[in-house]
Image (cartoon, rainbow, N blue to C red; front, side, top):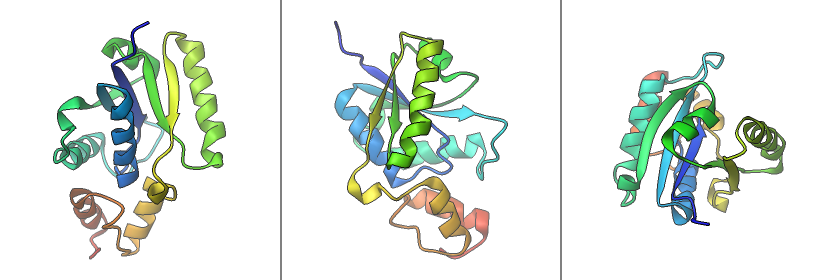
Length: 167
């Protein structure tokens, strides 16, 4: 059996952090190409629009030597349908702590039920990024905390603009 060359790394990426980028790097050790995909979920109220997040991700990844192996996209509807349309048979998800596992496991099982041809793999970020989440970054930035070692410079600037603060 031939190894899959394409995987999808889905998420809200509101905003992208160095933890996300670490997972992109780890996924690219396994797969030739990766699609970083933002699910368009109207029930969620993100800080940044889908278009802003797509732009931030592209700009954040642009300086890395692997950028030509990464596609950045958004999709409406079911992730497994998007994966099938793109020709990907693997979904990459990140796990930071045991608390992430139950929810991620439920998602993986639902995706398997919806399409048995698509597998989910879980990757852990480096220890440096275990405590980082987009939510924590936004909260720190909202109150003027320095997030420069947690997010790329373009993201830090966008957070500053959103919160009209000096970060």
